[in-house]
Amino acid sequence: MTAVFLGSSFTKAFDFSDKPYFKLKPIGRSLELEGYYIWCSSPIWGEDGKVHLFYSRWKKEKGMGGWLNGSEICRAEANSPFEEFQHKQVILAPRGGEFWDATTCHNPLIKKVGDQYLLFFMGNSNGKTNTKRIGLAVSKSLNGDWKRPDQPLLLPGKEGSWDDHCTTNPAFVKGNDGKYWLFYKSWNTQEYETQKGAVRGNRKYGLAKADSPIGPYTKVSENPVIDFSNLPNNAQLEDAFIWKENGKFHMIARDMGFFNHEYGLHLTTKNGIEWTKPEIAYLNMQSYVQEPNPPKHLKRFGRLERPMILMSKDGNKPQFLFGATQGGTFETSTTFVFEILKG
View (tube, rainbow, N blue to C red):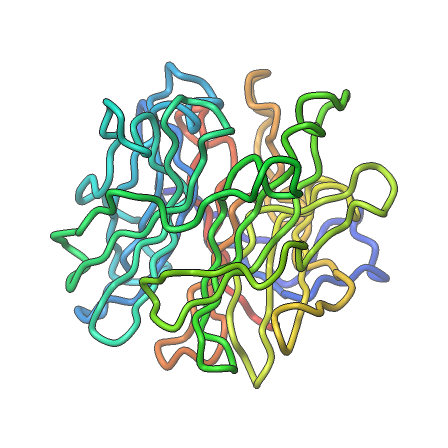
């Protein structure tokens, strides 16, 4: 593993008027696998004191788009977030046939409630976006066995609604109302099919709640709770992760046009519905590390996507930022870890 450190300073291109919410110290590319793209790195402290990382991967020959048709969810371990992770096992693989997760398993989010581990994820059945559905696998141990769902946990809205295309990018937290909150990303099919440009459709976030962490979940409204569609440049967001800190709920997400397409966003809420105006959570990768220019097929080089946070062991404070970024030894994509110095 190659770790690159710049100390506490950023590059000269950084505008200090846009100081990000998190002050980050790069640790490095902590999980790289020959022959695979790696994405979606969700960490959790294990009872063994190690960090267990639930991540998605797909074969290199599929290219960057392989996440949609052929991704599988795996588990890796490290003694600490400062060390290299080692692959341990495949957790969920596409089942084929008529299953709702027949062609991909992606977007892992690992949580623990009581004595049960919850693995939220996305599956699809046709290798396309319009069958993406959020599911939930459960286990008493991080090693498994995982009880796999026969049906998705959350379905899209009715035809014509803002969320009629899919449900994906699960973000989960216990709310201040005693219920369990599941945030999800979606968009409208007609917009997606008829719009032109590099990014079609406008990704928004909805909220569903349940009395039990395993559901059933009911959407709180027919409207999204986060919606940038009234802003210029088709601004939107994705890859949300949510945690509770000091009585408020925080969200970190990938920017898709609010500032640019390389930064992370930070928002807060007290009730899950009314959110603050986004601020910069973190900058583009080049602001923290210097790496050689990548080959032409890595068109997203320089972004940290799928941001996930490893809290302190008492659950009170964000300590490490995990994400996925293109590049690395095998010219694919890897897990990248930062220590959170302030935030």
